[in-house]
Image 1 (cartoon, rainbow, N blue to C red):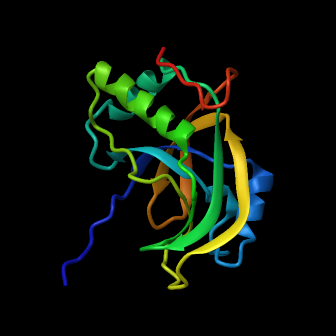
Image 2: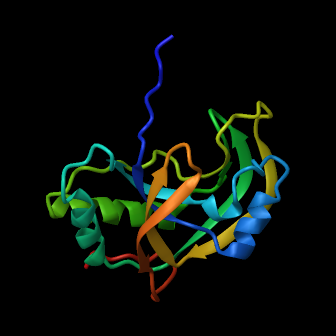
Length: 179
């Protein structure tokens, strides 16, 4: 069987739930209690492996995000699903988050930056191992994403290194604009 190669220092743009919501998610029976609640997140974009990135790559991403303007948006998950991992998902489209991602992608592409990927379905991973229990409805978990973070996830160390924070201020929930 071929060996899977994982990025050693993957770089992500993500939103994290507020501490009280993260604690609630972490307390779900299917959550991996070995990982801290502070690591829970929803990935908006992936930028590759910093261990293999060319010099100046991180600074380029940060400069790009410094100029991106966006507003806060609502997030709501109401089910747990087991695929390759155990995740929180939404039974309704996360339209505002998708719009945020669309505008983020459009902004980067307009500025000639194409070294990123968008996750196919927004979710919060609560256990990186599948638990085989299938899908189940849960009491909805919701928050307003009012800050995006550029995070280096140090593989094998269960650690996030924050490389930048950007507030997602005002406006109507879900409204985004490229700066």
